[in-house]
Image (cartoon, rainbow, N blue to C red):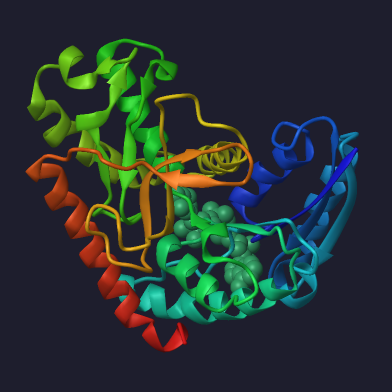
Amino acid sequence: MNKIKVVVTGAAGQIGYSLLFRLASGEVFGNDTQVELSLMDLPQAMKGVEGVAMELEDSGFPTLTRINCYDNADTAFRGVHWALLVGSTPRGPGMERSDLIRANGPIFVGQGKALNQADSALRVVVVGNPCNTNALIAQANCREIPPHRFSAMTALDELRAKAQVAKKAGVNVGAITNLVVWGNHSTTMYPNFEDAKINGALASSVISERRWFTESLLPAVQNRGAEVIAARGKSSAGSAASACISHIKNFLGKTPQGEWFSAAVPSDGHHYGVPKGLMYSFPLVSGGDGTYKIVEGLELSAYSRERITISAEELLKEREVVKDLLL
Ligand code: NAX
């Protein structure tokens, strides 16, 4: 039996509630892996965390060997192999994006430093928003772990885009590949429909009307979160947890030949003009052995290049807002 220790922050929150059971079930790490789950949240949320722990216990997952509840990162992160950083300060009324970035910065400084106590094979996934810049702050404050083990989640944007294209083309969502989200998890994100495929053919050869992509698909993906809130009265949680599961599986498995997936990872400055150090969502392929690569040599149109640059510029501005936290 393999053994793995996973910490989830924001464990009393909505995404935590959808995510934890699936991590415990064997779906992600396999039925031959024993999972020790650490549930971390703020001290005032510990009663809720204990309730979730009871329900996990009552679910009877044979793969779940131990549940720990913590109200601080220093203890919670000790020896973990995967850290799923979901908890963050929500956007309050009248808050600008830069206020949200500043409000969350100190959390990810503290959590980044606490991650120095993790297992040396640690992988980090940041879900809590603004996830790209939060991931950058955590990575910059964690000197013991190589930067490429940090990522931020853009899989939900990818899955939302795939769902829209599948509906338009009248195919199953599994037929859509290589529809990768570039950049920031924000309104500047760019779901690159130009390289997307439907049953292996370029999407543009199936949906010939380019205006549908630029005028319907892109706003639909950007506004989907707000639409869910309007309908449900709460933000996306089940789909966000599913996207997090996909994100982890994408990094654990070997990407099928010729396909790509989206995640924000540290830019090395050598790909598509994205400045070094930004936590930027690229098309990636995973080797299935803990390694991954940014897909190289894509011939991007002027339209795509412009969108990719706009998102990089936004991330540069976000980095500027938190530059004192990256030292
Ligand atoms: P909830 O408000 O339901 O839960 C958040 C939980 O985090 C709460 O229990 C809170 O006590 C806890 N928390 C706050 N600060 C913490 C800290 N310093 N340490 C540990 N826990 C802390 O939010 P939920 O709907 O679960 O969303 C969580 C985060 O995911 C939010 O930041 C949200 O914006 C972000 N999302 C990111 C997405 C993405 O694609 N990257 C999509 C979904 C979601 O919007």
